[in-house]
Length: 107
Image (tube, rainbow, N blue to C red; front, side, top):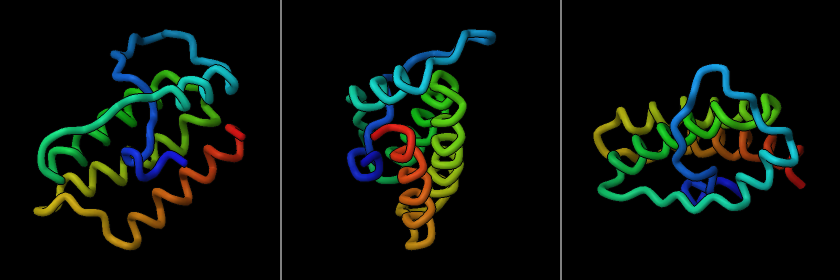
């Protein structure tokens, strides 16, 4: 499950290169399962780091897996923009739903 472990592991920090081929779904799943990313700082800083991390991961993985990760990045950007950097119940629900979509491909 991607959500709690930073918000659930989603890949090592990598810089994206335009035109870089995307991973296959199996490669993407293996990549996600080996993620060791851990944010630091206060809740707001962590949310910002998670959003950026998700975006970087989404740029690398297969499109089927990237779409939910991209949505998770957008949610975390919203969270980072709050004064406390805490997820609301609705945002947590959204993150869980997107994480479950990833789980449909990465079993």
